[in-house]
Length: 258
Ligand code: 6PG
Image (cartoon, rainbow, N blue to C red; front, top):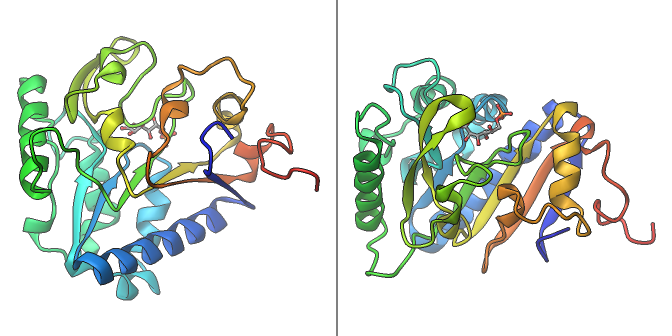
């Protein structure tokens, strides 16, 4: 594995990936609330998290997770209104938030509807500084950040060869993704790598090649965004279903000698 100490868990199929993700989410949430009285989580967008959010909103997780102590943020957002089909907020609201006893003041979405993405990024950064009571050079330490990964190795909205991926001062960046012809808002790499725990959710055979490139220590693709995620003082856990793991060799699976 490229990130020392990271954990790879290969699950039989999507259903077992959902269950493993929900169990990890529950455990991290319970620990955070016990230690600090609240659980701060940044949600991922895209399609992979959908069944995980639906699983969290159903029993046994719906009644076991401390939702009233949970504060929701996003790892990234598309620059669209919150009711747009592409909105990461809308996806999470439909699959998770509307089913939970969550107070509106516990949900901090990125304002993708702002016609000025740079202003939306700056406003979200200020929101993070307030919510985490940050000093000037401090970064927010999320209890958990959920991430997915695209076929080009992007994660959140940190795309290859983008200035957002290189950003080291700001907490939140606005980025224009040429191949999508779309503006995005994203947490920056320093914020991801300040997290206490990161869960990557990777599903499907179409992710097998890129996952091998990201996890293979000998891979030359060191610049792939997802490969640069490595919390300095936190846990990195890859939850991957069998089809997505199908090209991983024993070393990448951490099966030394088995
Ligand atoms: C987004 C996500 C993005 C996503 C990957 C994988 O806003 O789209 O933050 O980083 O996790 O593109 O997407 P899928 O889960 O749909 O494959």
